[in-house]
Length: 250
Image (tube, rainbow, N blue to C red):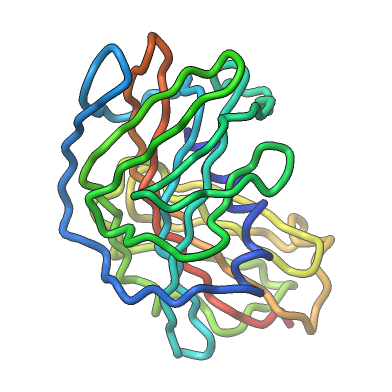
């Protein structure tokens, strides 16, 4: 699930930077319960990987010169086989809805929200009509989002020749590793922190393909991911936080 969450972040960063939706609802208090219909077993458990899908709701925070805006988005992918180290093949899931709102296939069976955004604070009900070998199922649960209060530690300006150290603190209620990604133009680098807090350093050698005097986006991704078995197949769900700091690379 961690690999798919990072892949979705890479795919969607340009979409949601250029076309954002205002979200009026705050992230909810932390709690997770599950009920299942259309499947053989109910409830959610923390994901251990090997899921055949990723249905993700995300709160996205954008920090421009200390001015922070919050938006949200929804994305879903369904796979021909459980996720492994190999990039999975996406398959058609038929009609996909979240709280009754269609999540539309945007090509290659990647499903994104395109119109009215549902309230992702919860409760959430994902419904999939199925197609081909994918059977219909529905999953309802109260989401549990990570929390991040340390965005003020992310640098406003970075110097390529000195390398870039990113300090992460203020992370709570986070099941997975912290993913830190630097984006500048067509270049990007990713590192992970096991646990909730710590630091990573991108050396000047690692930044060789990054051009100076350019915008640098520092993205922090946090995720709580779950699995539920429907018709004998593990389906994956995630509640995530994506925090983007707009910095400058000198």
